[in-house]
Amino acid sequence: MLDVLDARLLLLLTDEPRLGVLECSRRLGVARGTVQARMDRLERRGVLGGFPPELDLAAMGYGLTAFAVLEIAQGRRIEVAERLRAIHEVCEVHATTGQGDLLVRMVARDNADLQRVIDRVVNVEWVQRTSTSIALSTPVPTRVRPLLERIVR
Image (cartoon, rainbow, N blue to C red; front, side, top):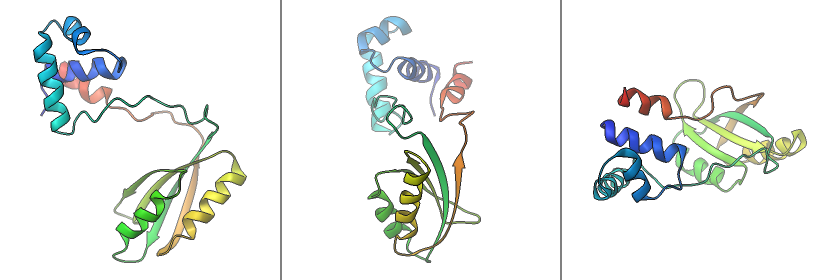
């Protein structure tokens, strides 16, 4: 579990990921060593995995996002996931319950490019059936802020 200081530190780093330990300690009103120890512990526990920049895929030329539900041959989840990893436009793969076995988030430059990506996904060995939906917008993007704010309150 995270405590209030952990949550405040993570909120600060979420808002300004390039802040140094000294500036974090100044803004949080705690010792530099405390911040460094918290960050080290959060990294060891896997809560804090690094500081990648937030990239806008549309600005990079990938303005189309789609989700595909894949039904795959029994017992082939790992093999299929590895083959999907080789498709650069595949951004995420989640093993799921329900209708399908894997949920795939992929990006493309346009409809023709999406067809190319879907063809690559469909041709992965052991993929038996797919159902693809195009995302029209993202009213709630990936977020963790509400979870951290709940701890701080």
